[in-house]
Image (tube, rainbow, N blue to C red):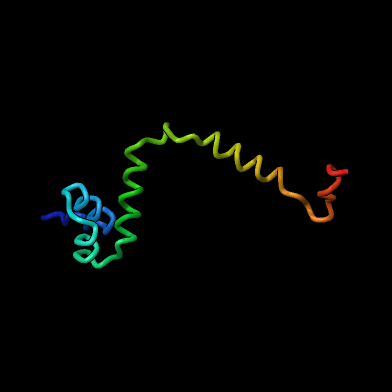
Length: 83
């Protein structure tokens, strides 16, 4: 009894071809996808290689909180500090 090999996804094929040094245009035409898709997968791979521990997630969360708190609500007097 012969086991069938799992078919590679397009993502896996893109990453394999990128690691072999193929050009983005060539990969896109060969796999019948867009150059944008190839660039996206290339970027995702770089992100994974860089490592999650190097991302400044607390900083990103903090900046969103500050941005959220600095927005004015409807009806709030935004010129009261100018008096």
